[in-house]
Image (cartoon, rainbow, N blue to C red; front, side, top):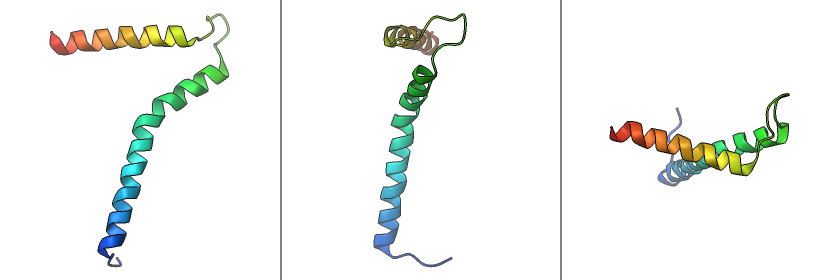
Length: 69
């Protein structure tokens, strides 16, 4: 394995941190975008931002309830 200079190591660390940031903050928006783009399955209501928001609120309240009790 080749030896890396201190500057090269710092650049690689910045690159990995940027990748982690993009994956952590970009994954759910991409999944939501693809879901809205595809649309609903036959027989299901069309997805809306409002329904997604309400679903996230109920999910958060259940998660908080589990953690606290």
